[in-house]
Length: 222
Image (cartoon, rainbow, N blue to C red; front, top):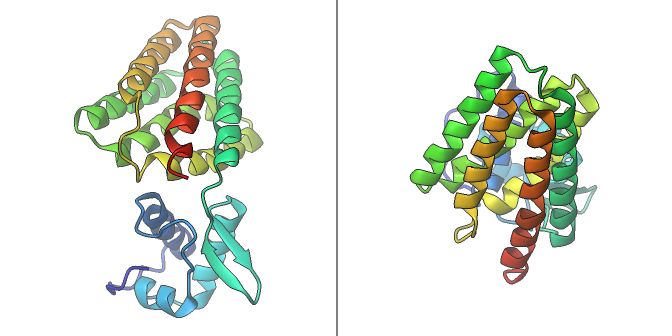
């Protein structure tokens, strides 16, 4: 739990600000898997009242990032590698579906977003910035999901992506990141040609080895 106090969070979108602050602390490893979150320490750290903190924690619990057991404990959810395996598989399926449905119909702005997130991922790779790489990959694929106009699909992928970011962001030594960024660039190029079949095929090819890579890399650290 961070010990250093800071200025109170501004009231604008307070619940969301607190959510982002706690989530980022979990993703970067400041708050570790299994660590208990005590109300008084959260109040001191975040400099705000209980209600928005509780609201943020409830949302994190809905995403599977925090565990809430009434009258017992609130803690950062332990890493569940079976869930991670399933999340990788499921996000791959959903990304492929969304790309096959939307490529060829993406707007210029959406194509620009894909290009921008691809460039972000390349920059993170070259700067050895794993903390930035995970979100760049997530946001790249969310362009396809959002283009479907299916809110449930978007929310599902956003929730699953948080589980994967917990593994990727604070860790070092993940193999295959160079290949992953190269695959992202190939997917972006195919999307820009409007070839939905080729884009979907590239996503399918990307996710089988990356799923295996995640599990082989991190099960040894369980």
